[in-house]
Image (cartoon, rainbow over all chains, first blue to last red; front, side, top):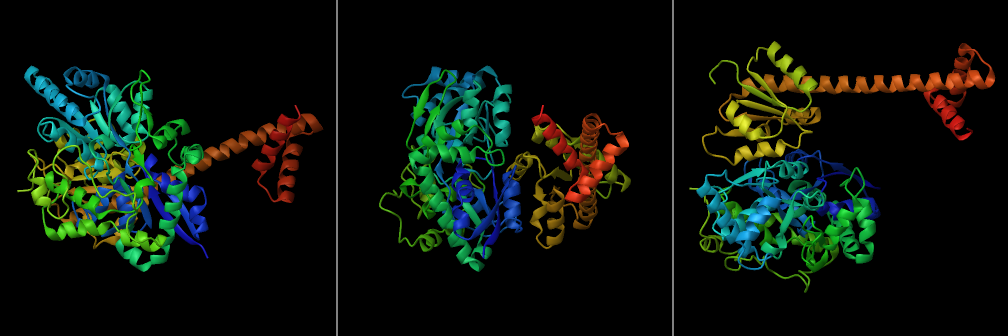
Length: 388
Length: 195
């Protein structure tokens, strides 16, 4: 007997493992009859998962944690038995801001400390001349994009709440807003950075993998209560997604995966643009400059699929740093408990993380992350806005 | 806000649906209704209006922009989401089904929100029904055009009157258990192929 499931997703390349699992028949092979529902906002995905219209969802990792902590919204405990991807975002800036940063750059253009310091000089010069503050867009208050932008600019001395405007913008509006000058830069997932470059309105300044070596991005999210009642279905979903992730990671399968993802009711952009993202080989400038990175987006390799509670702790630490959450040992436990390597291992008959999965965040600034001492870790950062 | 009419903002890119909703709210005595259809600088506009209730359709990606209101603690009154109150599951379900979401400023009494939300749900459903009927009417019109063209082909090829051509179409549809429009379409396709 097959189990009918409704799973929500946002049209982004990091939904790849989920979409391929369904469209390539891996989910059906596990006895699951999945209907994928394309959504327009993270708020919709979260709410429909919370009230049970969705059985599972492609979800921003920080939203899963915020929902479990009841931050800003209804408290609904979420479990993430599978990590849909590590990294995959990029920071894209307008041609004018690119030129301004490059003019101030003292160091390597892909060194985030060099660019952050250059940004702080640009910001200072603008303030002196009475220009409007720069506007940076990201996708959601509880998003990796928000924390990645903040982490980067704060390392160079730019206060993200005082020195620039940081605004939420739906991904489909990002490119237009950059072109029209409503924003000067954005941090978003694929394919939007590439689209801005292809249209000649933006330069990719950084892959987020320049900022953090390993950053949990989207998770496969289920309600904790539902997952406890349906352990077999959860295991079947994990196996199907894991098989799809393995499929996508094989270079000879990338063209097929990109074609599947490019369908109008899936991501709905050119297969070519999607494949560049999967390959980690991106055009970063309208003049055709290419940049390759084997860390741009990790879908299955290096143990990317296995949820890592250290990642959840890091995300929680960012919520604390920027005043979204209060610090407490209990909240930290809840946050870490959202990421469920135990469910992943049970589904795949695996024990512990693989030898190829490094246990690190790998941030370019600050001390190595210590999940057991969030307060001590955060003390090392000069700019922060903790809840009073 | 007092006991006077709460200030309501409708964020909707569909002018017709917004008008239907606005009219319903006014009829029910909610006079302070403002419609925003332009998504650029949405938050700035909302802050300037300082509403008690914000209604937004679920097809609007800018819902995520509204979520940012939870983050801003400056001079803005704190909004809370409709979904905060889990006690009213039926109402949440009904509004999601209808495709509308509400954000309500903290402090507005629950019994004052309920009628607004109920009205929204019924107007959103009415709009969806209207849209369906419109789509059906459109496809009926399409069908009629196709049938007219098929009749023309039959009249020309078989020397039939218009009446006879129609009878032939109808009897074929009945025999094949198909719609007249489908039979007409296959005649059009066949005549394209045989050109």
